[in-house]
Picture 1: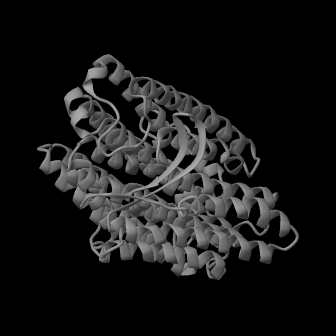
Picture 2 (picture 1 turned 30 degrees about the vertical axis):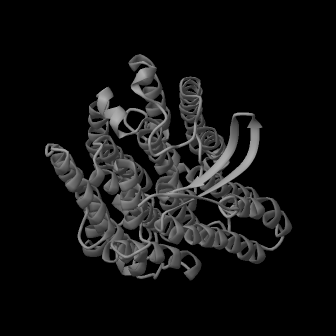
Length: 499
């Protein structure tokens, strides 16, 4: 299918609507939590509608573009919605909507709520800008905005642990962003262009040394956000410190934005043929494979629930990087689908973790004995997401890992099947004991946390988003091949990249 460029005013709405929520809805509803919740939910819902409305045209071969602002005679702020961007956009906006609805209950007794909701909405705006960026400069502007302006959300609790995690986060992010900026400037100097093209911007005539320097600057810069080992240090501290609703999007979308950046570099800046000629991707394969196994091993030993889930995120993003580095069509499909599937799997787990923290006082895995008797719906959603993370059919995690496995065989790299299976086995080791303890072990004696016979399910405003995320995890597995699902967008993106 040939792509057809279509001028449209719709893509900018995806980031303008959340900005409207931050600068208009939050100030006007400062004294009314009910109206603030309604207003922000409407802005998030409209963002989802915009993102979903672009998908049919994209699947039909349309590529929507919008020129926003001319900065120099040769450089524009430019938006471009292709299959890859459409997939990331609908994933981010949907998970953000669930996290926002969840926030209305979780944040009810918290301080500085206006600040929280303003930056929460702005973070969605910048993320949608990343999804729909059409050139490297636009990508960088939105990427840096959402990287830096999410700092207030990381440190929202204002505890010593949160402030320390925020400091580490901002140091990592600024270093990574500087390397990305350097790579973009170097790319523009060599190519005279920065548009994200399916054919790539660079070629071997520009010098192998120059190309390798650009590639590694991009990889390390985006690898910080993608949490590739050893660039992952901020993740295990930021997730436990942040409020649970933000941990949900931090793990499900923001870390994935780094992986999305790596995808843009591989398929739209360099291109498959050039990277094959450079011979550099085998080293990325080693890094990604090590990330999958190493982070999963560290997750096994974490008693803090959110910290265990944070290491799980690092491991799962390693799968995405591994799929990209194989430079195969099936592997690319698996990597793209895994970004979306992981967002809802891990989103469910973090939403459930927030319910355990808020309504049972549970922060640690060792405190979860028998909790399913008091929070059956919460733990039911948790169990669904845990099984999906392991790769249990017919849940969504199985779909993406199936395509990753096919991709490994297609490019004659069966050795990485051991990594795929090893990561799944380790996921079972760090997730299934939680489910087992919750359902089959005796509750903690009364008085240690809460009386053992007290029902602790959260209000519907918090419980429904967790259940909805678990339901999406099930649907993305059962209906994976349906039109408009992540798999269809991933197949189109891979077809354009390889043909």
